[in-house]
Length: 248
Image 1 (cartoon, rainbow, N blue to C red):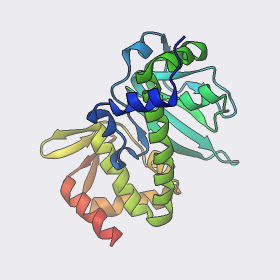
Image 2 (cartoon, one colour):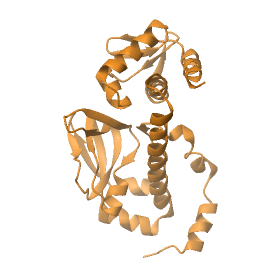
Image 3 (cartoon, rainbow, N blue to C red):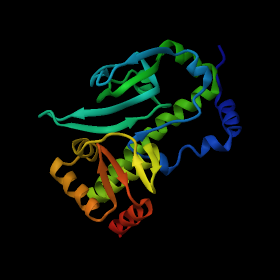
Image 4 (spheres, one colour):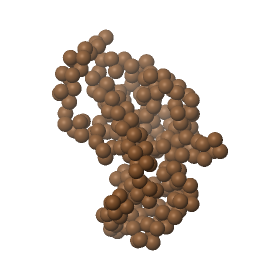
C-alpha cells in the first residue's frame, strides 16, 4: 500500500490542473450541491442502488457505513423542528457525492437525506474507498474538494441569514435554481423543477406566509410567474438588478 508523505502531497498538489482549482469559488456556495469531474476509479468501486420518490436514505443520528454518488434524480437534505416543521438544508443534484465526511470520520448525520424523485445512485462502502484515499491522489483531492465546498457553503449560507432579508434570499434562491435547473423558453427562464410555496419557505427557513408575500411581490413586479407548478423568471437581468438594489 502506498502512502503519501507531506512533501509528496504538496508536490502532487502543485501539478493539479487549473480547472480543478476553479471549482472552489464563491459561486459554488449555494444550497444546491453540484460536483463535477468525479474520479472514474472511485465510480468503479460503487454499488448501484435505486430509491423511489420520498425514500429516506439516511436518518438523523445514523452513522453511515459509506456514502453516495447521485447518478440521476434529486435528493434533499433536511431537518425537522420539535413540532414537525421541515427545513430544507440543501438539494443534491446529479453528479454529486454526499455523506462522505460522515462515513470517513464516523460522524452521525445531523439530518435526513430523502429522494425527491426516483433516483439511481452508487453506494461506496467505507472499506473500499478508504483504500483509494490512501493510494489515489485524485480521489483524495475529490474528497477534500467536496467537503471543503460544503463547509464553506454552510458558513456562507448562515452569513446570508444574518446579512440579508427574505426577499434578497428568495431572489438568490431563484437565481440559483436558474443556474442549475433553468431552460430558456420564449425569452423566459423556466425553472425545470416543481417547487411549491411551502418548499420555498422550507428552503428559506421562513414561515409560509412570509414566503407567499415575497413571491407575490416579485410577481407584481413582473419578475416571475408560475404556470402548471413551474416558476418562470421573466427577465433574469432585472431580477439580478432588483436583488442588488435590496443589498444597497
